[in-house]
Structure formats: C-alpha cells, structure tokens
Amino acid sequence: MTTACAPGKVILCGEHAVVYGRPAIAVPVTQVRACATVAEAGEGEGLRIHATDLQLWHRVGTAIPAAHPAYPLETTVQHTLQRLGIAYLPDLTLTISSTVPIARGLGSGAAVATAIVRALAQHLGQPLSPQEVSDLVYQTEVIHHGTPSGIDNTVIAFEQPVFFVKGKPIETLRVQRPFWLVIGDTGIRGPTKEVVGDVRRAWQAQPERYEALFDRMGSIARQAREAIESGKVEALGKLMDENQELLRAIGVSSPELEKLIYAARAAGALGAKLCGAGRGGNMIALVRRGQAQHVAKALRDAGASLVIVTKVQSASGDGP
Ligand code: PMV
Image 1: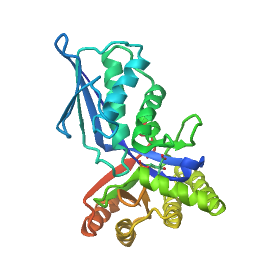
Image 2 (image 1 turned 180 degrees about the vertical axis):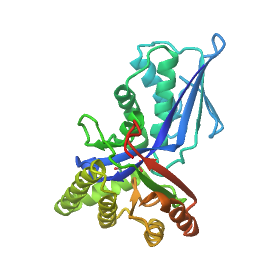
Image 3 (image 1 turned 60 degrees about the horizontal axis):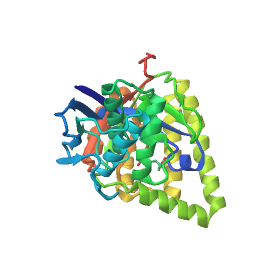
C-alpha cells in the first residue's frame, strides 16, 4: 500500500495578471491537504477510484462525461499511467480524501491530482520529480480551469513558496523572516473559470487599461519578492493592500471579500487581499506572529466560514 499527500496553496500576489505573463507569488498551505492511497486489488478487478469525500466509486476506463465529478480523477490516472509507460490498467484501488475546501482558491483540484500522481508513481516503482508531477497535474488543471497559468500545480508539486512566471522555469523563494497568514473563507464558491473568462472579455474590450493594471500587479509581485527575501514584512503588507486595490479595479472582488478584508485590517493585519480568482473563495491577511488569533477571531466574527492560520517559511524552515 502506498500513500502520498499534497498541500493546499494561496496566491500571495499576482493572480489574474499571471495569466497574462506577469509574475505571481504563491505559497503552500500545509494545514489542509489531499491524500491518495493505492492498494493492490484482486486479479481482474481493474483500477477503481474511491473518492471518500464525494462518496464516489469509479472504475477507470468506464466512459463518463467531462462534467462528471470523477472525470478529473480518471484523466489524472490515465495521464499518469501514460507517462509511466504502462499500457494496461493495473488491478488497484485508489482511495482519495481531502481537507482542502473545494472551489475556494486553495488549490483543491491540484492538490488531489498531485496526491494521485505521486501515489501511483511511487506504488508502480517509478517516482517522479516535482517538475514531472507538476507537468502532469497541469493537464488536469486544464479540465478545471480552461486556461490555467500553471501556478497552482507548480506551488503544490514543489511545496515551496514560488515566484512564478507562466512558461518559465520555477524559482523558489528564500523567506528571510517567516511570516504568518490568516486565511478567511467567505463560504462562497469562487467560480474560477467564469471569473477568468470575465477578466479576459474585459481585457479584450479595454486592452490598454488592463495591460497597465496587469503591469502594476507584476511590479507588486517583484517588489513583494524583494520584501520576502529581505525580511521586510511591513512592506509586504502594504504591497498586498495595493494589490487588492488593483484586483478591485479589474472587478474580481465582492462585498463578502471586502467585509473580511476590512475586518482583518481593522484588527491590525499588516495587509489583506483576496486570493485566487475572487468573487468568492478566500482572502488572506498578513499578521505579526502574536496577532494571528486576534485577526482570526475578527474574521470569524465578520462571518468567515473557515479560518486557517499558516506560517510561511522556506522549505528547509530556515530563518529565525
Ligand atoms: O484557482 P484559484 O482560484 O486560486 O485561481 C487561479 C488564479 C488565477 O490567476 C485567477 C488563474 C490562473 O490560472 O492563474
């Protein structure tokens, strides 16, 4: 039996602009995760998927429409077997469970796919590198999002803070001084595909205006990288606030997100913004270590359906 897991993620800055070639920063969130377990099954049983949270059983190879909840799981398995050069369906049971909230900008689809790819590859004796895992998961992201930038699969497969530019080799960030994020859920589904489509139509209608806004978001991501790598947490907070202004300007914020962002700032957060596609899903607040519980309570009081506190640090856990 083989089990592999993968974390959730949040985008610290640069969402949407990243689809248009600007840089963005994302960090893993280890407080939530998806896990996949591969177990040997009886001869002739084929490859069956059991998604425990969805109470779903699916036999790989059975035709299903693209809208079926098992479709991304089936596709991930098929792509992985193809990549491993396995031309038959082995007799296995693949059990999947996840604590990553679905459709909230925390990367649930990419986390589940990453866990599946890793578990299958390890079980079949051909472990893959993080880049290989990321590339496979990207193909599943296309099903979820249509035209994903690739940031979710990258940060989740590498499990490190990343400075990401579409189509460029991954750059991991060295976090000079660890910092804390409080993540607040509006409780509303973030319709990523729809919001990304709306932004595209707005960009087509007003290319100059949107290109200028994306340029400013890209510049914020570059400055944020410098702030993270030199331990300037206050500066990072200001940049997150600026990024939120720009996200509002492109029309992806919402009254529920604004309410939580306002509550976090009023409770003393150094900066706050929506994260991911927007119009629902989560917001993040940057806080000093001792403030996290106070800001978390303020978010709950303002109506957040789920609050997660996470520490951001380099993979090695370096820094004071
Ligand atoms: O999946 P989410 O909600 O974290 O949003 C994805 C981030 C976008 O930049 C809006 C889209 C993308 O593909 O990068």
